Length: 133
Image (tube, rainbow, N blue to C red; front, side):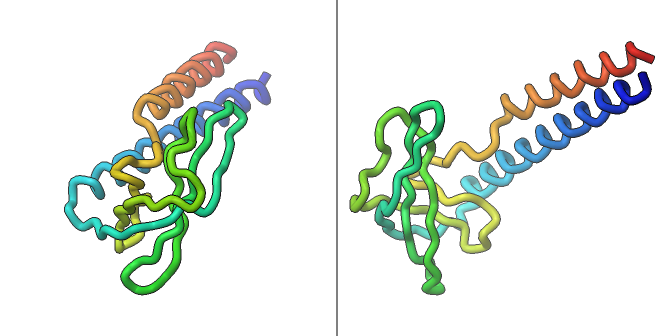
């Protein structure tokens, strides 16, 4: 019984921590977009990545002002966002605190809705763990 309560509690904490992490990523991305500190450059699609849900994201290689090369990923979509070899506009954070935007679109890192779902799951797990006591 105690093991089951501990399992529910640990699962609740994990779901809450993951939800907080996703909310933090989303908040950090929004602060970057609003900050006006973005650097603009051009990049080229060098790779495609398919998800298990049959969505595809484009990997865009770009070079920052310091000459370092980076790869930023587009949001996963049903059609190829940027074809291999095609150019894309990249907005990146020179401080490296936020994900780059490709053609003005964020990669979908973090989601307040999903974070809220994690918190709801956390509450359900915690309630069920307490109910077992």
